[in-house]
Image (cartoon, rainbow, N blue to C red):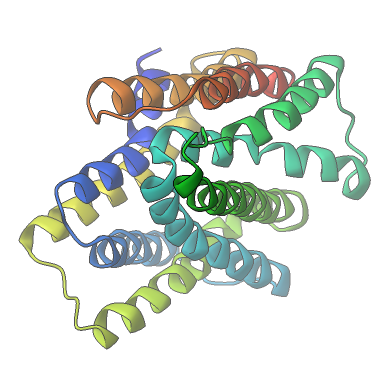
Length: 289
């Protein structure tokens, strides 16, 4: 159980640490550069250590697609933190896992069980609720609030679709590429995520200071270590426990820290959306693995 708990805490650390850095006034682009550069260096080290540098065109393509999704995801997460907070942002990202589940039915002839069908329907109800902001009753503020609501809906939709594309790329690699090419897949993935932030940071002359460098290393550590622990967890616990608890537990942990520590607040509709998201994540993960 310690592996599962560690995975939940570490993987939730990505968004929570970004939110904390923003609250403290640090620049997020340099933090993103250090985060992805760290992951790229570790991916290269792993590839050279295993001595398997071969790859197919599909491995290359899926790595690039997943990397592009990661790079855009960082931008969208930053926008989401500013507009709707890390809790709702995380919920939109987590719900995106229904995209590869649905498309797997058509691409790889997978079957969706009863619980997953209910989970998908619950996710479709939760998604629009996450984008609902309470509008002001003041006539002067009504137009501004309406514009903010449209922007919020747009951000939630992009978070959902973009993360779904990333999940689909991962699924495609696992289904169609040799598993021993995973190190090279990660090299291509993190290469694509690192390059844009190199251009942005050097173009704007935003080199990370010591604190931003620390945040970037810490976030990179959470990402890589959390993912690694998740691969170990099924060796000690049934997959029927690992997948649902991982998804819903991460959502719950992010919500608790976001509200109690980071001071996030959201309206009743958004709160209902978060609750339905947690329920959906449990249901769609039943039967996975």
